[in-house]
Length: 256
Ligand code: ZN
Ligand code: FE
Image (cartoon, rainbow, N blue to C red; front, side):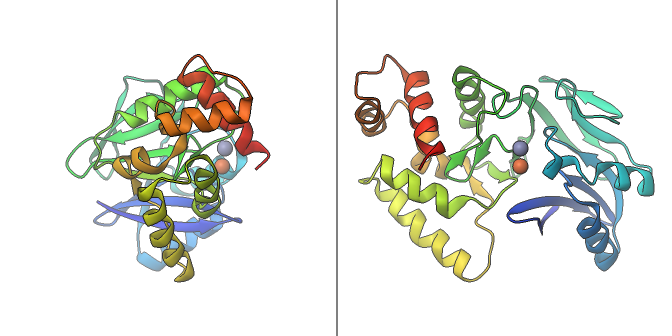
């Protein structure tokens, strides 16, 4: 399976999976760049996968589904119209035309019904929409800090080699915030050098890996002493546990 990035809008990535001549697209916020990509490569669209209901993730779904008459997979409980398969955690899908299997995780927090698609092996990958970002996480539009930290915990427990395909190129801004939280993190400094160089060449920083996120992403490090200390300084008092640490740094990031 090949995975291609189609940049769209300001900083979105629409992900195309391709096996032989068949393709599936994850979170097509816009149909036009997907149609151009398929045309250029001589691919036929066999399926659409959606992670959540925001327009920059599903705006292109109706036009693509009409043109290609392909099934649309998406979250059962996130208010996405026109789904042919409504998914919840525990479901396993095999993408038509590609024969690739994904397990579904419920990852509420950014939206109430957000899901992620996980392929465990060979060559593990996760499509996590706006839940886990490279060195960051999505804003809490519809969920609580407890929900989001539990969702991030599910992703953090995937195999370290799992490549993380999130939906936005937010990495350098996220790294700047992560440095404010954990200025002494060596792995983070290395990542900054690597990802800055990629952006200078116009290359996506996505995918990262779960192992890299565990080492550098402050939102997955809410039990690390340095992150707890930074959150407690920010809050001005002791915090009882990782959910409160998460809530404090998520709030901090909103105004950073
Ligand atoms: Zn979103
Ligand atoms: Fe988005």
